[in-house]
Length: 287
Image (cartoon, rainbow, N blue to C red; front, side, top):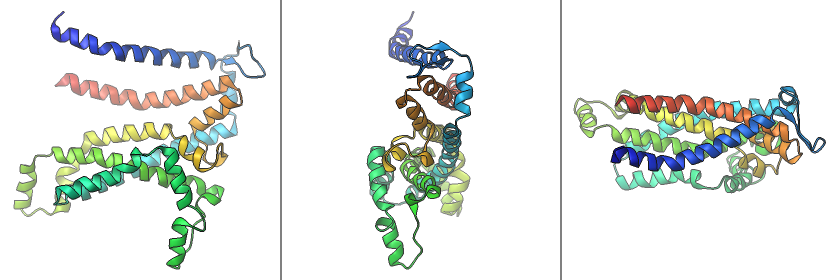
């Protein structure tokens, strides 16, 4: 074994230990998802797929699954679109100082705890204060935001786009910066406008960033818990996601049902991560 192989083995040990713990917990959840285990049945006994059938027939779970998938799809679409737009606007700023300032401003929401974000937006969504006070001053119609069941989910979706679009912009901006300046300068000499440079040079060069951003936004959307929980005071059924639904089953001591939801979240996350990981490994080996 050479020195290089020894280094790889040493640095792989923490990863392998963590992967082993994670795999054990996943298999533990899978195992107990086939049992009936709750406060009514403190001694777990095997029931096969009956627990899965019970969970899928639960109306709260069905809506939590639909809402999570909608949240994921919407966040990917809006996060990527706004990320590209913000990155493009920052890239074409002439001042490096302004680039740094605006990058920090757009990335700042992602650095905040989601519970703190929820408290800020609860005030902004107040029907008499915040955004509505500005709309009223401009003689524009106000919006119920978090006051109606039908507007709760769209309102919180706007908040998640505000939080994660800065992260998307950072990845796209890094791709834009990797484009050789000589290529950009040559295009400007040929009379290309900033819009043409953006669509014909910068955007095609950001394919890898699109893949990374899409995977990250999908994974973040599966983890949404603190925002709806803190903004609407707990287990509000109109904004319940899969993670909140899992928590609901757990605190009501339906442990097997919570394991089923955990398995479903794990399967969705694996369907996102594994293709991306295989793509990355393929590119790394192909170098």
